[in-house]
Length: 282
Ligand SMILES: C[S@@+](CC[C@H](N)C(=O)[O-])C[C@H]1O[C@@H](n2cnc3c(N)ncnc32)[C@H](O)[C@@H]1O
Image 1 (cartoon, helix red, strand yellow):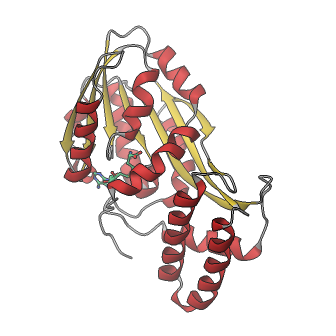
Image 2 (spheres, rainbow, N blue to C red):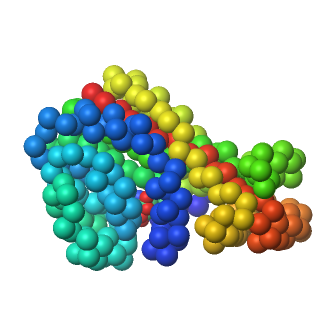
Image 3 (tube, protein in one colour):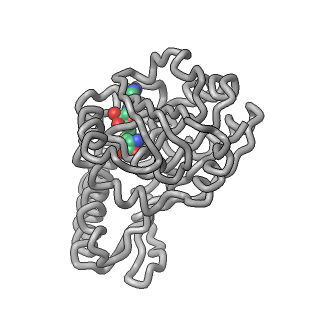
């Protein structure tokens, strides 16, 4: 089993950002905002922050002034995040943001000192159950709230032009192989892949936090302007992962890929990718 550190291209994060923002749970953010409303100034830790997409979505939804610490092991992504702060720092509420280039595998516990909120987006499929247990212990100990968005839950299916699920045996096999591939180690122990969507809330509940879950699926409709670029990139990545997982199926995968790619390009199918958002309050 490989255990390579997970690296993401800034352009890929930019491509997915509109779908991420459209998918996120507003009710959970509202509940969080309500919970935090008495604070004058919030200290917020964003784990695996990339170029700062989570901040861009969440910060305007919280009323208080905010100090964000964006943590990632990729210095180039954090540099892009800082460019974004410099370009758009005049908003209300007042937001200060810093970045720290750190590997989440060796996160010092002090990072969580005085945190009001620990957050992350699109991170938990990369981590192990042990890593989640340590994180949850720190959060429970610190008394911070937690909002973890966009954890993939393993559902991915095509839809027709009317948004109806296309129930197809070959797609289901590709979904299964892809999900197995997602469990290869990514530098933080044996990656949970889509199991994270259930392991994470269970661990938070076990630690005594009040947990709420909401679906935050990507819904890339057939012939929607945004579907082609993101859907094609997803499909390419899906195909590569399945071939790596099951090289003996390469010919079958190739034929499946060509059919679906063609339908996607011609606006005949769209794609749904299942995610969950999880809010945990002390
Ligand atoms: C799917 S991206 C999500 C980025 C961002 N949260 C967003 O929503 O656009 C996962 C992020 O986790 C970071 N990451 C993965 N493994 C990490 C590790 N071991 N230490 C620190 N960051 C890590 C990656 O560099 C990447 O920025």
